[in-house]
Image (cartoon, rainbow, N blue to C red; front, side):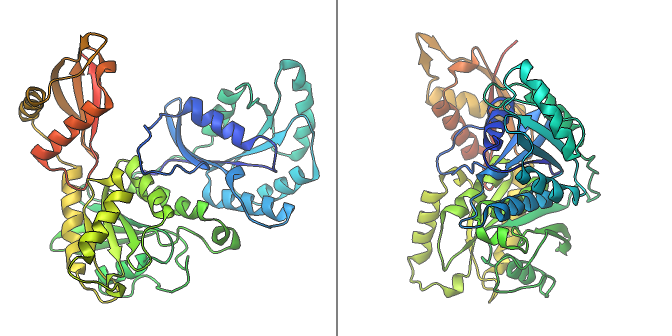
Length: 436
């Protein structure tokens, strides 16, 4: 199920980014830095008291030369579109301003719950300054201090109280859900139509034509699928067209619902930084991934072109070294028949379980081949391993001291497990655990 989304909204210089960074820095389950992923400052996944959620910092938007109030309005409207809960941030040292009132008018018209946060309340004596903000009409203000980290817990408590209850999807457990992600106009809708063999999704040369994700049930050779088309990662409106930072937001919930994510690249235009950002979200979400190079019919090529193109993809997407790459043309339907078998394989590996005794044979052989590392005279000892989850396959390796498990040795074990069991198309996770 998709996570709830919090958006932080407010006029400039009220501390939106400071609060965002404070929440991300202290309340998030940190994901290790992986070479090749460009992290986007305005979006992150976080956790608070068993609540997993996504958070957006609209302060990270740059709208170019837009007038002051227009910029605020556009940021707020994007947040209203994308968020389940809105944190309305104001500056406690400056009191209520005309710009605050403009943001409030926009939020009044939304159906989204709003939590009013008064920032820069750095000590208890300053709390008397928050009462003027009742006039904005959003109930009790929450005093916070981004610079000192005060009140963040209370703020998240109030926001989490408004999280919607998600209903379970009623698709059969054997149904494969896959989404198509990528920047606008790489041919995602055309690819859906080519798979379905009919014009089920509007196709246009105008970026952002499809406005929302569309679920399309589909059956082929007895296998049931649900295609989640995220062609509309940017909704209609100038703000979505004026900043590439928001092109990923339309895909995030679809990624979380998917078993397999197709990262669609424009073969004619080539790879750009935005492709890596979008693919990085699928990887961090632990979804199976297939890289699809579309518009291959428009590429001038010889017998080495495909090999060279894949080499470039591997160089740019080092964090997706497990993802297969396929080349096709949605327009001509050339090689379109190779897509579903690849999706099936990735979904199967994403849900693959390995017997514990077989897994431990592989681990022990790996240790014999490459002995465990030492640190300050202490050697890592591996006792046994077991698979603890699927989607993605996750393995607990029980050791004497988890901190002795160096990243490079974990990577070595990852490679040995892949060599033994495949896992093409899916990330795998390895956790070092102390044996009790």
